Amino acid sequence: MGVPAWAWIAVIGGLIVVLAIDLWIVDRGEAREFSMRQAGYWVTFYVALAMVFGVVLWVTLGGGKAGEFFAGYITEYSLSVDNLFIFFIIMSRFAVPRAYQHKVLLVGILLALVMRGIFIALGAAALERFSWLFYVFGAFLIYTAVNLIRQHMKGDEEEFNENVLLRWVRKAFPTTEGYVGSKVTVKIDGKRMVTPMLIVMVAIGSTDLLFALDSIPAIFGLTKDPFIVFTANAFALMGLRQLYFLLGGLLQRLVYISYGLAFILGFIGVKLILEALHASHVSWAPEIPIWVSLSVIGATMVITTVASLVKARIDARQGEQAHPEQV
Picture 1 (tube, rainbow, N blue to C red):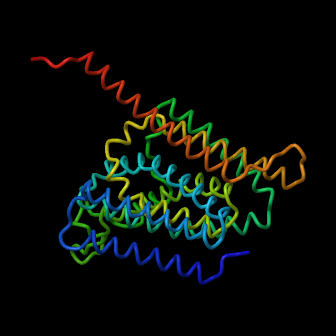
Picture 2 (picture 1 turned 180 degrees about the horizontal axis):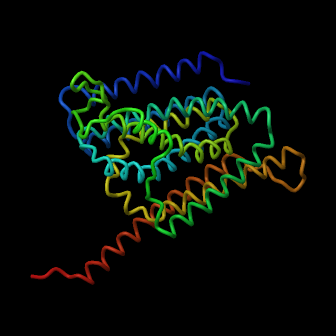
Picture 3 (picture 1 turned 60 degrees about the horizontal axis):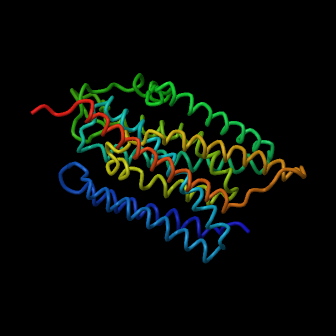
C-alpha cells in the first residue's frame, strides 16, 4: 500500500516549517559564529525529530517500515559524516568566514535536498520498470566500497576537485575578489556580479549531490519505498549543518570511519544482489530481513567510531612520550 498524498504534503510542509524556523533563529540579527552549544542543541533536536518520526511510522505503518526508515536514516547519516571531511576542505579552500559558514551549509544542503528529491523520484520509477538495475546498483556499491578503502589507504580521500557545474558557474558569472558580507550578488559600477559566497554554496550543493550517487543506491538496497527513501535522506541532511560545527576537530580523529562506511556499502551491495536473485526465484539466494541490516549498520558504526577514538588516544599518548614538554 502506497503512502497517501496527504502524508507527502504533511511531511514536506513540516520539513519546510522546521527549516524556516531554523534559518530565522540562526540568521536573525548580525552574522555570528555558530557555537558548539547551539550545534549540540540543534543536533539533538533533529535526531530526536527523526526518532519521533520513526515511532510514528511504527504506529501507523508497522515495524517493517519503521525499521527500513531507521536503517536508511543511520546509513545516510553515517555517509553524511564522511562527507563533512570534504565540506571542511571546501570551507578552507574558499576561505569562508566562520560567521557565514552556517548559511553556506544551509543553502547548499537545501539545494542538495531538492536535487535529491528529483533523483529519488527518477530512481524509484526506473527501478519499478527495470528490475535488473538492482544488480547494477549492487555492483556499483561494492565497487564504491573497494574504491573507498583504496583511496583511504593512499591518503587522498580528502582531495576536492571542482566539478563541471562549479567550473561553469565560475566561467559564466563575473565574481568579486572577496566576500561582501553574506551577499551572493552585488552591483559594482552598475554591473551585477556574484560573490564567492554563491560559488561556495554551489560547491557544497553540487558536491553533496555527487555523494548521492553512493547514498541513494545504498538506501534503495534497504527499502524500495520512495517515501522512506526521501524522508531518511531529508532527516539526515537536516541535521548535517549543525553536525559540522559540533564535530569540529573530532572528524580528524575518526580514522577508521572510511573502513566502516566501505563495509556498510559492500554489505548493502551484496544484499541488493542477493535479493534480486531471490526475487528471480534463485533457490540458494536468501532474503536478508531489515532487522539484520539495521543491526549490521549500527554495530559497524559503533565499532569503527570506538576504534577510531581509541587509536587517537593511543597516538596522542605516544606523541606525548616521544616529545615530552621541556621545562
